[in-house]
Image 1 (cartoon, rainbow, N blue to C red):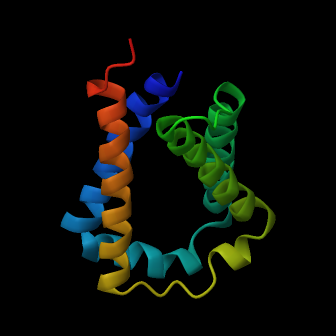
Image 2: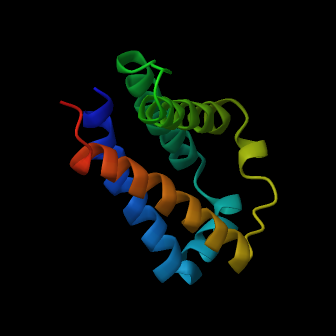
Length: 127
């Protein structure tokens, strides 16, 4: 299951990190505009994050190896973000200050985790 989730999460995180790098102006405006976002969309985003995170954790609550820990942490992170967007959206959207450096730091994190998971999913030998 670790490899299967890594095959899905890795490319998603890689593409997101690339988006942050190549379309940083778009993402900076999106973060700033999130204060005025439609409340229903915020709730739906929370629901999606929450459900995706719990699906990962329900299928993969494993903490023995580095790949297992990273996959489980992706589930924990998605669940936490979903919980925050649903339960305390005003805190999740408070003060959306995103500098170029902050977005680049986020991009680096997404690329690192996504690259690692893509490796685990597509190139690592688990046989």
